[in-house]
Image (cartoon, rainbow, N blue to C red; front, side, top):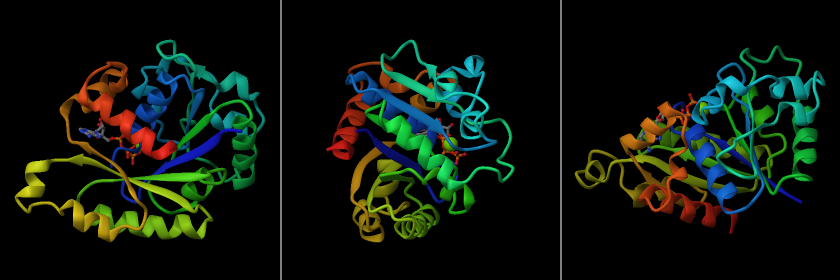
Length: 239
Ligand SMILES: Nc1ncnc2c1ncn2[C@@H]1O[C@H](COP(=O)(O)OP(=O)(O)OP(=O)(O)O)[C@@H](O)[C@H]1O
Ligand SMILES: [Mg+2]
């Protein structure tokens, strides 16, 4: 039986999709069968981060509404064995999707894959309720800014209310010099502000932005500090 990880944030642009793509690619490289679902309905990005935008025929909306079968919407990434993507629809949900639809889909995927990673829209509204419906665990991606941290804490309360007991924090876009100069909250302060344990810290690095622009997950290249960091973070999360 597989496990479903939701990747969420209170504030937008913290790096959820980047994290979902590279977490999924890391697990797939380790030989684990993985599927990533883009639940940012109407604002899809994950297909671009994998360079698979020309391969989208059916999307997750088509699956959830029964227009196509699960298999028809799974896009296989040829660079990674065992890695599949289900794209978000180009338009926002018209309200016809319910959390139960999502829960059923996740249950079915858990029977096939070791890991199901759900890339959530930012915020704590209906989009989160829908995306989180089948989740066993959540990774909150935040940045070292007070606004993002407060939103992460608000999201954390909402996740708890939704019944997601297992949660982790990943701190992204960290610039060490800013922290040590006192221009950004320090690690100790950040961990004291958030309840879930810190699964990892990812530095701000232009190469990450380049990789999402080029549609090549950065962990594809072995032996870089970023790839090794992702291995460690994935290890802490999946245990
Ligand atoms: N550690 C990092 N260093 C540099 N750039 C980063 C880092 N993490 C993410 N980015 C860049 O920040 C931008 C936003 O990232 P991403 O799309 O993953 O955020 P998101 O949380 O999914 O946003 P949204 O809320 O819009 O869905 C992208 O251009 C990405 O390349
Ligand atoms: Mg995103």
